Length: 246
Ligand SMILES: O=C(O)c1ccccc1NCC(=O)[C@H](O)[C@H](O)COP(=O)(O)O
Image 1 (cartoon, rainbow, N blue to C red):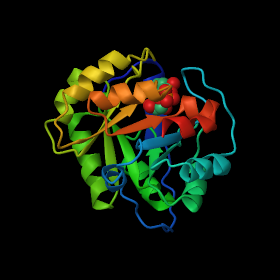
Image 2 (cartoon, rainbow, N blue to C red):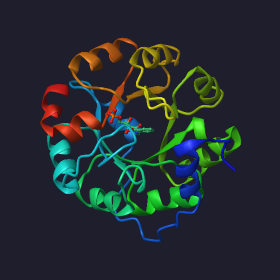
Image 3 (cartoon, protein in one colour):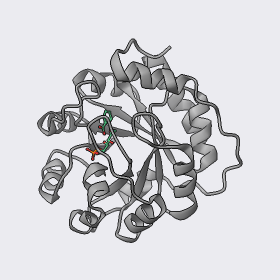
Image 4 (tube, rainbow, N blue to C red):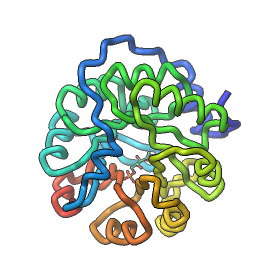
């Protein structure tokens, strides 16, 4: 059973626990996110996120196919697709549709607490999944990580504070996401994210997530060790921004 949670997080985990596995034969090769990030030298490694709405108040209904195609054509090295339905307006069909279009890594962005969700990610063509330290027990985190790796998927292990990071660094998770957004209060604290980034050893791939608005934010986060940048709201509001952020 995931960790004790309150409010919307408890609700979103309860929904995750009951989501059905989608049984479908995977139709695309696996594109390793770690490889794409490590081989990005001449530009910023941007993972462009598709999310229609969010608890923080985003509400942007764009054409998914157009968005993901545009991001790939303009240099994004990955796509994050929200598949959580209630709070983010996402769906498994969004993931399936994105997988038919792009030839760059796709992250299934959801609140993953079951193996069924990881099976669905693999079957629908995702290349990576998100494992959020804040909502999982350590045993669940390890088990789900190994389950994903056994399918050939990579996992971004997401931390939001020093306690989460202390847990994540006990294991050899090779991709760590630092979310500047507090998942309960929704407050975005870039300063805190920079402090967490600095605490991560350089043998891990570090992804800065949330609150990235402009090139200055990227330059600053790079100074603190970020290798890649997961950007949703800024790009959903104005996809052309990718041209100045890349
Ligand atoms: O986006 C939200 O409002 C949100 C609220 C609570 C938990 C997670 C949330 N979003 C998921 C994410 O981590 C972000 O979508 C992602 O990091 C991109 O953030 P942003 O560029 O600030 O949209």
